[in-house]
Length: 152
Image 1 (cartoon, rainbow, N blue to C red):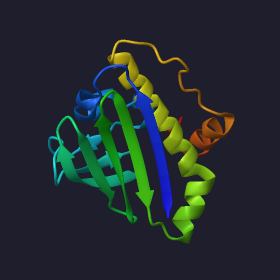
Image 2 (spheres, rainbow, N blue to C red):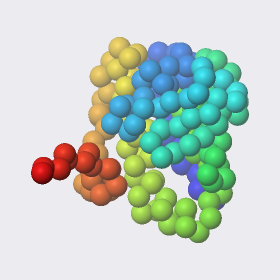
Image 3 (spheres, rainbow, N blue to C red):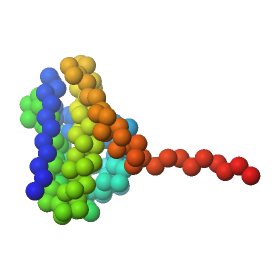
Image 4 (cartoon, helix red, strand yellow):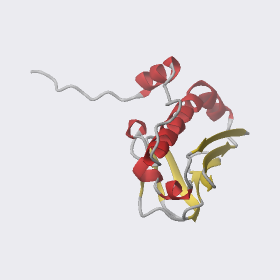
């Protein structure tokens, strides 16, 4: 089982930021889109990651279940603290992908999201997220390049 947790003290009540996850989603990680307003049953994802909302308590928490693998991720608020928890019961191939690439990308994405939330809360993060050389390399290797027009 994989369990990955990120927390950030925003210095203000964190509840409203749960509801603003789509608005504050870092654009570098692909737009977070769902097929209807956030709520139970909304299908969507970001980039190649697909999920369905299974629980939503406005101002408190939102949980998504992955559609292509067994697991979930939850964004929740408690006081001034915003928390994200990913739990996955992945098969061997997904565990290998997690260890080599996805974990690093996921961590960078979450820290970028929390930076955006902190800025929206009215303060600059004490230690803004920085992508590691590994994250930059993996993104470069797996980000589709736009096709150049062919010359005749």
